[in-house]
Image 1: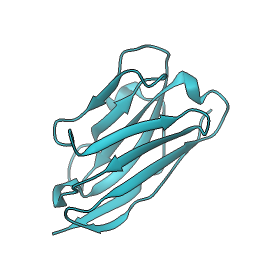
Image 2: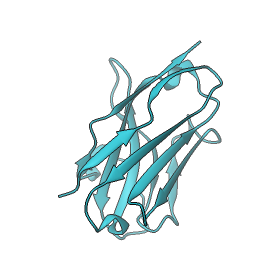
Image 3: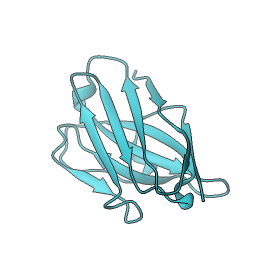
Length: 126
């Protein structure tokens, strides 16, 4: 069992930055692919970014490429999402997700992920 705890959400003006953190329990973090999803009101949950277990493979949604960066610190069992140049359309609840795999393939479907955090709200004002 893995527990994920997100932090770092909040209210920011358009053009600003936020860094989300997701701390994982357990001692097998390095065997998990990690991802960030988001869900805006009335919309489906969508993937934002993902990184495989060793960090060598990365995926970004087109809407965040060049603005967001996913990184992971296996020693701290933590994954981060640095969000720059935020836009009002980035407003959503952001979820951290984990998938037990040592594949180099980066999954983008929510059904592929086994564990989820409780979510953290990000609100970008115009």
